[in-house]
Image 1 (spheres, one colour):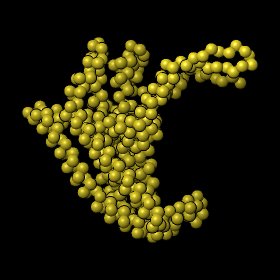
Image 2 (cartoon, rainbow, N blue to C red; image 1 turned 60 degrees about the vertical axis):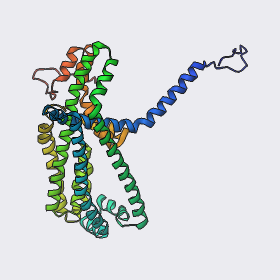
Image 3 (cartoon, rainbow, N blue to C red; image 1 turned 90 degrees about the vertical axis):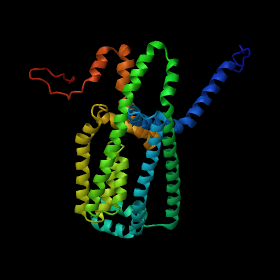
Image 4 (cartoon, rainbow, N blue to C red; image 1 turned 30 degrees about the vertical axis):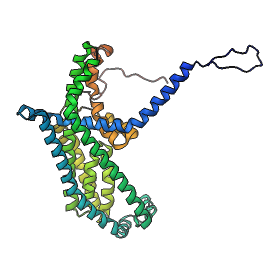
Amino acid sequence: MTSKPHHDGDGPVELHVPWTTIIKLLVAILLVFIAIRLFPFALILLLSVLMAVSLFPVVRMMRDRGVSHGIAVSIIGVALCAMIVALLWLIIPPMVTEGTALVKSMPEIRERLRASMPQEGLLRLITDQSESSLVPDTSAMVKQTVSIGRTALGGVVEVGLILAISVYLLLDGERTYAWLLPYLPRKHRGKMHETANEISGVIFAYMSGQFITSALCTVYTAVLLTILDVPAAFILAVLAGLLDVLPVLGFFISIIPAILLALTVSPSTALMVAAFYVFYNLIENYLIVPKVYGNRLRMSTLTVLLAVLVGGLLAGIPGAIAVLPVVASYPIVERIWLKEFLGREVVAEHAKDPEPPQSTPPGAVEPSLPG
């Protein structure tokens, strides 16, 4: 796409764009479009890899005891399906019962909530403004039910895809990895093998640890809210367990509805719920998590918060879940692949536990600002 330029100052200015540039631009646009369209599948694939890596030690243990690889994977697949069916059978009926009772008692809950609030102030204003949302509206409820049903159906389909892909990865993952490894230069294959082994340990620690902490959170919340006679205790417990996968943010999201429903019982009950929620959050962060995860996932609270926010903005809750083991794997990549580029001293300093800032020693001169 070329033509001779006009040399006349008053004539039009022609822009010369080669056909190769146009083709490259179109190809780039096409690749971006394909990447955007495939992003949900890439996220599903990432979650499948996380699950497959977390289950692979079980396959290896069964193989060491004489069970063939195919039979071991089949046993795990059947066990996963049975576990999911059992969980749904245990969770769905009480959730439906409590949800129906909660909807029917919304007017009463609204009145109790208004009675427990002060007559003036911000809390009263928020209660008055949200009053209409607590009154059941038939048409709105039908629309919300359809929307929730579609979301739930989509979630079930995605979970099914993740499980299916995970089983296939367990079945053929090692052969696929061995087939892809020769694409790397021979000098990098040892690094890749070391990276894969160490990252698999991080992923296993994260997935198994998260399952344990979520289960403990669900049981603790269910027992607490049942003892305090808070409405929809089972629903709130399941919500707390699911949101436990979101560090920092999940706690604040789960505590708000618990406190609001506890207010319908009494203000003292709401205070007790808040206190016991905070107590468990502290116990989980400073006692349970270090014991469960060990030294595999050493990340600061700021790093976790930023990672969760970025993952959530990019891909919602699944992205926030998947981003943590990815971020936790960075020190491994830095130590194995970036040591020569960053320098051994930098990698060695990053491997140490960060020390809190210390006060200025006696006799030291602090820097002063001009003026």
